[in-house]
Image (cartoon, rainbow, N blue to C red; front, side):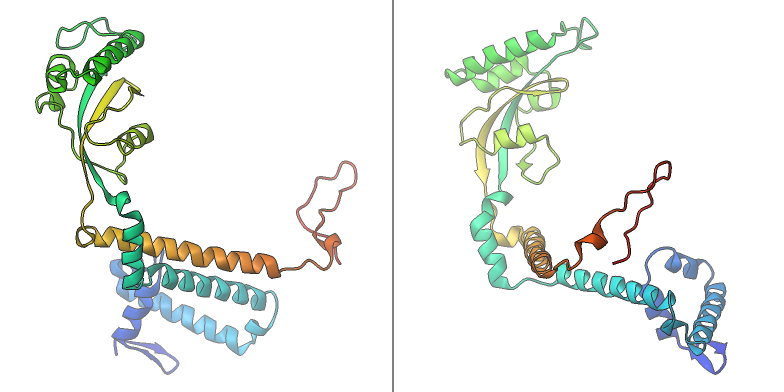
Length: 277
């Protein structure tokens, strides 16, 4: 026992830990800051709740309806948590990976970047800054040169405005579909075949040209956690949509007039609600 709450009620350490651990919001923090004061408040809450039970508040409106609503909320959230966190069967994981293994592919690319500016006349390295129109024209010309058999690494070394990738002969960090990269880049890169060039891609400060070096799909063992999360999400979404559709199909409105918003008299603001059936 860790506390005597009075009225013959005693509290064990396990009971307190389970109670605090189940709570969301500020309660766990309040317990950590001052567990004794928290226990006093808990005792007061328990005593008042017991008194409310004695006076049969749970059987009287509006308390009865509020309790019913809160109970539905707690049970619903508990069910959603259980369903969304349920471990999927192994066959579902393997089935998902077989069908969508490409979603976990990693693209190795080289990149050429041409910057543009609308302000300063020269770049920090002494090079003349280009306007957007000039940068696009330059990139289009370089793309044509590369797709016609030009040495892309040489083109990058001599023209790219990205010092980091330029110093690595255009090598760019591997890209994954789930990475936080612009959709235009993602769509372009993951639609390429090895050795192919993307179209010129405009971004806020410059133009990009990508060449796909290789696309690597890792084995399931390397991405199992990611696949499991994706399967959990897909199964939960399918289950929830089924439930929603079933309920939608079953609900029938027997008195349409009840659900009509009444028209207030002239000069009286509308009040949300419905007329009595």
